[in-house]
Length: 144
Image 1 (tube, helix red, strand yellow):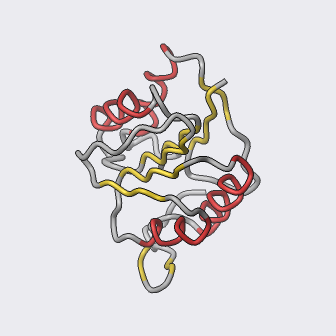
Image 2 (cartoon, rainbow, N blue to C red; image 1 turned 45 degrees about the vertical axis):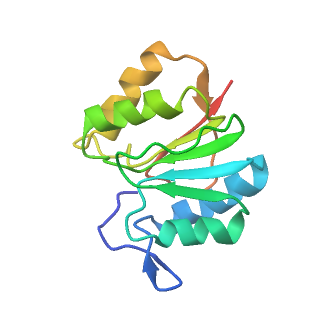
């Protein structure tokens, strides 16, 4: 599924996620029970509000900010998804401590997320796919 540019909304705020991916977030957070959900790239704040409805500890940081590092965290990388360098920097910053990673918009080869993730995984074999039940625009990973 490719994002059409029309965001889903949660409590009146744009999420910039597909409804399927919002379901994926809810199901994965429920299933893996991370200590924290860290969202990198806040956008309009709708996804943060949605995540707060399904988890008690959600921290959101804007692009360029560094959030807390928690060993048992699910980190959602949705910062500058257009820039390969920026996404690779986020992967290096958070991949060392996260237990689960969601690298957003890897379905778009013309954006930076997919090539950055390929490069990162080529030297970090400790990451394995995390299955999700609904169509997704993202790559879901768990540290093996």
